[in-house]
Amino acid sequence: MTNSEIRTDERIAVGLAALGRPAYINLGRVDALPPGRDFEAMRAATYDVLDDAYRAGVRWIDVARSYGSSEEFLAGWLADRAHPDVTVSSKWGYRYVGEWKLDAEVHEVKEHTAARFAEQWAETVGLLGKAVSLYQVHSLTVDSPLFTDERLIEALAGLAAEGVPVGFSTSGPAQADAIRRAFALEVAGTPVFSAVQSTWNLLEPSAGPALAEAHAAGKRVLVKETVANGRLVVEPPAALARIAREHEVGPDAVAIAAVLARDWRPVAVIGPSSTGQLAENLLATKAKLTGDELGELAALAEEPVAYWRHRSCLGWH
Image (cartoon, rainbow, N blue to C red; front, side, top):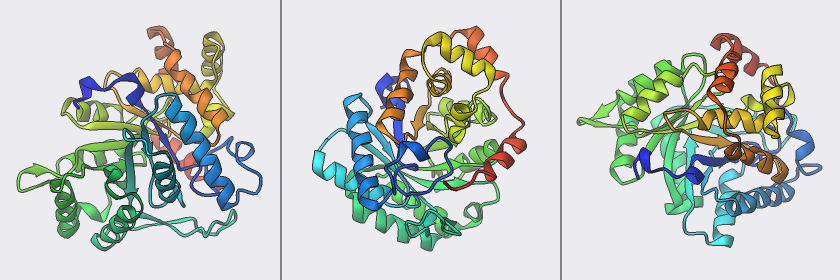
């Protein structure tokens, strides 16, 4: 399917970063989760969100090796529900080490090596099998050792040659540079990557031009952190709050609608912590923003370095 053929309901994906583990950096998450956040309660909450998302027409689920038990939860849900039309994307490169503790000193460890890729791909396949439609390098940055690791690059190209599309996600103030550098990687004249998942939101839109270039080149574009890890919901700027009131939706819906309004047609990855948050997020498809509103919202952008510095200070809750 080409970018121009993506239907509206295929432009929303549900990410399980906030549901696959007990602690995460999203604001406004704590009260939405089950009391105690034990393993079985989080599994049940995940199933509830996935069931509601599927009923609403969402067909894309995004997980990662570092999202605690997200792959396990998703695998169980897929086996139980037997839906034949779900697109699954996952990521490798971080390992979850939080041991299901809210107060773990370290929650995840990053490693972009060929050995970690082989290990985590085997783990992903062991849980999700052939359901994986896209496998992504997690949080690729311009200084990642991946760019000079020929063994790793060839391994990724090998997976793509086997029919599993390979992509990458990005983080940090130099996302645009990482996007352009990654899409330039080739093995035997064939591009390694066919998809990118980057942070883009009203506070941090700096990757936009590079993502537009990727779309124009026929790459699949996904956008994560659409509500800035909850900042745009818990502490919405005045203009965002006013526009949300005028559309009779929450600030989250307007922030996600702004993503969907991009002419480079990204898939918006939302990360609800409950069925209630999911329902509020999905109102984005009803909020048709005007050009004037989009222009006013564009003025909310922060300087990228300052944005990422703020994000690095968010605690794990």
